[in-house]
Length: 121
Image (cartoon, rainbow, N blue to C red; front, side):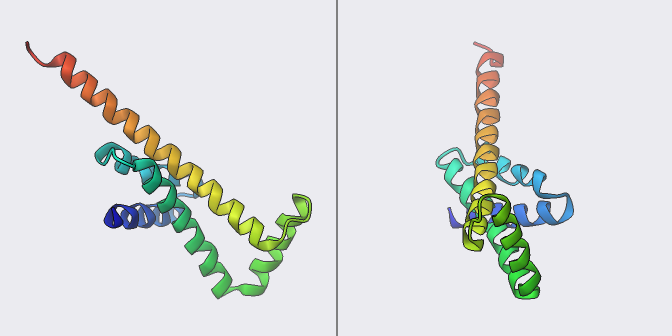
């Protein structure tokens, strides 16, 4: 389970950095497809952890601009504090991971259904 979580986290970081945040949903697809038990938890936690690492990296590398950006985004949503913006961001990443794992699990179910119907009696 830990290896699957780390794989999902690394895939989400790689996809986020190379293709953009929208593509991180693909990081949880293999977990849902190949590891059906609790895939949604692993997908959600892995992508949320990956996004949290990126935010933490931004805070370490450029603390003042990142905090100003978080405060600005928080002001757009009714003066949310910066930690709440970080939490909401990680939550959105977790939801994308959950959806990716769910889609992967649905694809695995379809594969199993097709294998049963295509198998000779």
